[in-house]
Structure formats: structure tokens, C-alpha cells
Length: 557
Image (cartoon, rainbow, N blue to C red; front, top):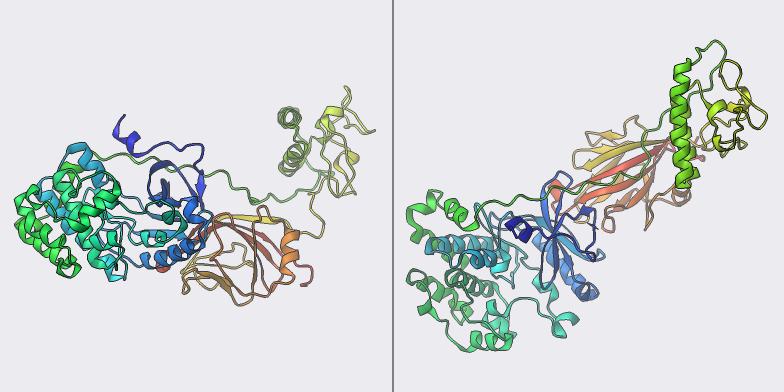
């Protein structure tokens, strides 16, 4: 098995293909909180998606704490942290997304190459301590710092999963025998159930560094209770560590939290010991040796074809006197296309698909083949024959093409509207606009020929002053179609009758959510969210597909 197959495992039957609009490409692993998958943002950047275990997701208290920790973690910005970019504590199941770090965990690196040399341990401690400064600066205690939560990128370590262990504390899952966190890397006060502070993470930093230097946990392995007893009641085995590391690790592993070094002191101590290398970019060379060759990240999983109306071709009227008639060669080519469409409809049993195909053919071929190849049933006109029921002479229902091959009036539904689109005469055509973006610098105007505006002067704007973000407008009203997919114009009309909100919170919105909207001129829009990114207010955006029906509200003239 090569490195890539070890890192990126194929999805299993019980893995979801999509989480909140992120299409999953591979499994990355699993832990006490849940499974981790590789996915990509809309722009193709790889991300790690952590999906919370059902045992935790079913606990309302967990969801509440998880939401609070997510809110705090969004504020953490550090050179040695994996940034949280998206999350939903109320999702089914709850999930979060962080930037993917292309490198092994410290656990994997040590298992593959053995203990790290002293300079690498110093670089490791300095980077992790700097990450803790950023995390603690936002009032978060990691609580679960350990080798598997330290990833080794080519330019240094990255700390992941900061703060979220707090959400699992006290849930029914942990109370009935499940564990969140690893006993071998807990601090004495954590093992004893005493107060957890930032100093708790410093103790875990010391244990993590000792693991990197020794290739094994400092307090040994075995049953969790035995390991925790040694952490609480025994002094660390400092003589087993390389001599240059002992003074710093002794301070990090002090039993009394007040006597432990601070993250800032750890960074300064490591820089002094690294000497000139600390300011000369020596770290990357150390990490390249440890992490090994870079693993190629799998490509993004392609999105399926959006199930939304695309821009439609205007209906062309039937031929009239004086129009040029198709040549024999054109009629033969059209007949071949007709046969392909008709055969596909019969074999698949999808009569509706055949009807839709012929509607498009009518628009593309104003000269028509209907007298010879058959026609479709219109919702506003009488049914006419299909090619499967035509007689051998090419005539049916009392109509036949004239000697020039042109269809007669009955074939085209002249005067009846049979050849017209199936929508009601009073219903406007839907106009489709894929990949319409809303962010701090763009907006939407339903009355414009192209609704997408590259400024904020449109009537529909995106506002993220509130953490959940919202749609706002001066004149347009909104209504989210809860659980709906494939919402129709009539459904939007019905629900918009009682709509009065000119702002709509996106807290309960995710990929696939559909939102109906109506402006003051009676234009109706349906916006289907494809990607929602609201973790970072300054970079937040929506991407979605928009369908517009012009002057569709019959109550507005």
C-alpha cells in the first residue's frame, strides 16, 4: 500500500456522498468526535470535513456547546492552526470544515520514521506553542492536544480540533463509557476532574513533545485507568528524554498548573536553543525530511448537472407563406434526429422526456418535421399523434404532409396553440441564471435582464453583520421553502402571497435550500443555494442558481 492510499481511503457504503453541499472525495480518518473526509470548496481548495457521530449529535446539550465552540473557533487566526472555514452545529448531522493540511500527523510521522531529532522537536514545540497562543487568545482551551491533532505540513506543524472537545464533555455518550480525548496525553487536573485552564494544554504540549522525542507516550500505555493514575501520582520519566529537552519539558510537565511554562516562554526557549537556524528559515528543511514526499491530493468530485431550468430558447412560430422550405437533405437529417429522440422515449418509457425533447426541436427547427415524424401533446391544446402510431404512408388522424414535405395546419396546431410551449398563456417563461453569487460586493436585481450585479445597488443584498448572515432588501420579500426541491412558479406564488419579510436569516439554510422572492414589480425569483460559506464574515458568500419569472405576480400590473 502506498502513502496516498493510506492517507486517502475510499468512501464506504455508510459514508454520505455529500455533506452540506461539499462533495466528499475520500475518507481521512475517524476519532472520538466523528469521521473526517476530504472535500473541496467551490474554487477547488481542499478541506477536511468532520462529521459528528450520531451518539453525540442526538444530544441537545452537545449541539448547544458545539455551536458555542464553533463560534469561538471561527475567530482563531494563527500561522500554526488549521483555519475553520465553515460549520453547522444544527446540521443533520452536525459538521465542521477546516482547511486541509497536506501532511501526516505527528503520530503517523513517528510510526513511519521513529523518534524525531532534537532540532525537529524544538521546531515542533515552538510551532505548537505559537498555535496555543492564538487559541488561548480567543478564550479557548484545546483540551485534546495530542500527536494525532498535530499535522506536519512542509512549513511547520498545524494544530487542529481546538476547542471542540469541550462540546462533548458531559454528554450521555461520554457518561456511558465513550471517551473524548486520549488518556495518555491528559493533564493531572484533567484526569482528576478539576478545573481546566490554558495550563492544561501546556502539559499536553510537553507530553506531545516527549512522544515525538521518544516514539512512545511518556507515561506509558495500557488500560486508561492505569495511565491516568500514573499521570496524577507519578513524576514524569525525564531521564528517558534527550538531555537538551529536559529543562523545558520539566516545566511543561509540572504537576502544579501555576508552575508550568506559558506558550510564550516555550516559543522563546526554543528559539534560543535553535540559535541562528530560528531566524534563517531552517524549519522547512527539517520538516521536508520528516514528512517525506508530498502526497497528491485527489481531484474534486464533479458536481452533477444542476436540476434547475436553464435559459430557454424563444418559441418560433410555424412557417408561413413565402418562407423558404427545407431541402430534402435537411428533412432527412431532421428525420434521423426525430428517430433518435422517439426511440429513446419508447425504450425508456419516458413519454414526458420525449415531449420535452420535441418542444426544444420545435424551437430549433421553425420549418418543422411534425407532419412526418410526429408531434407531442400540449397542455393547452389537443393531443396529436406520435410517430409510433403513424401509418405506413406517413399519415394519421386525417392529416398528411403536402407534396413539398411541409406539414399542414393541423399538424402544427395552427389556430389552437398546439405547437406553443406548454405553459399557461399568462405564465412567463422561466429564465435560468446559473452560478449567481451574493457577497459583500455583489447583489441581485430581479428586474434587470441580467440579475447578477457586481455592486451593491441591486435590490437583493447579502449581509453578514450577524454571524448567521442574511438576505436583505428594501422592496423584495423572501420565503424559504423548507425541505423543498424543485419548487414551481405556482408554489412560489402561493407562499409569497403572505410573505412580508424584507430580510431572511440564513441560519437554517444549506446547500440545496430554495428561497422564493418577489420584488415590487411582480417579478418572482427562485434561488437555490449551491454553496454557503459564512464562517468568516469578510469572506462570506453564497453561490446558487437563480430562476426568474418576469411579471409573474398577477396581482401586480
